[in-house]
Image (cartoon, rainbow, N blue to C red; front, side, top):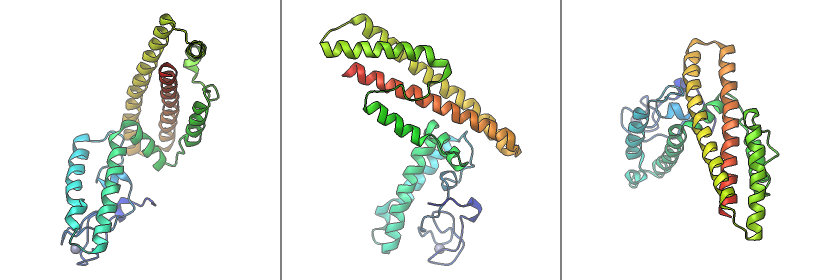
Length: 239
Ligand SMILES: [Zn+2]
């Protein structure tokens, strides 16, 4: 769906011709065909990374009730279809905005950033074939990743031979915990950038915006790398 300016997200109601809000006619209350707005506008929220979670949740529950397809069983066929469409849009929007990582990725996409979808796919492929070395390793993780790869290789080998080395399993488990802590730390760092972004966004400083944006992209890529590494460790340990 094309994303339009929230200011254009109102027009005439299909039923009574009055001006309408995004989801419902403010005059007669009829559900409206979905308007192509971004997820923030869908909830009437400003396009900011620091989201008022209370407001988001309230809007979500209220809209879930009002848009529920059961309410339109006796309505016209198109009203039923719209309530279904709007409900599924609502769920997608809520899931995306409520999650800190998904929300950041979504906003960056709205800003025209193509996040590493391709590299994500490459990662999945590499993981499926048991390799994890093809990705660019974040510089601050080079040593740990090198060490961990050796240990994982050894662990795979031992599992294949039916051997059991509790010390190695414990060591790999420790590394996994360290990676999870790293991933949490990156999330905290990201939250710091949210503040920077929201402030700069309001000031209209294009250069500053690009800088924060690039920092967020870099951080998300690093975090993605760490998450994939954790998954790989889990797979080897559970094998
Ligand atoms: Zn109306």
